[in-house]
Image 1 (tube, rainbow, N blue to C red):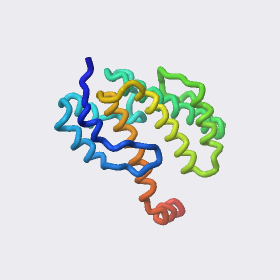
Image 2: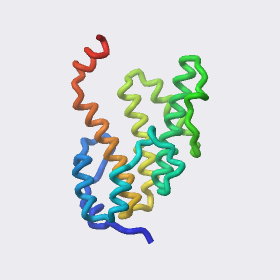
Image 3: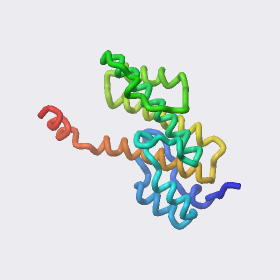
Image 4: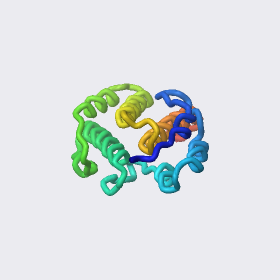
Length: 175
């Protein structure tokens, strides 16, 4: 039977896509540390980023599924972008064990968007929706904490984008 973290999870603020992050990553970890076993804390603290991880050797099914999904999404991006550049996509594709035909549609919609930031928002919305799908049936367990952490990372990515000095970034690109 999986460990349940009712007190911790019920005290966490709810997350919705597009909102400002209600707590910092460090604060989230600080909340978790005294209330969950050290092994689970290590898992949450060291969650792999999908782009840096094959996921195939991970023992935690939730992380494996997340990495497989994100890899599949990135592979679809490679296919679309390489098609536009008229180059072979195969050498840039990562091996994966996930397939979903709706990803191709989501990537095409994002690539057709003339605003790059909105295209990225569409892709992150796909990621968020997948995390929501994975959370079904998980309310007070480690899986919930893992998915919560990934969602918090998405929110912080967008907060960093909101806070960025756009004038300095434009000057850097133009230089």
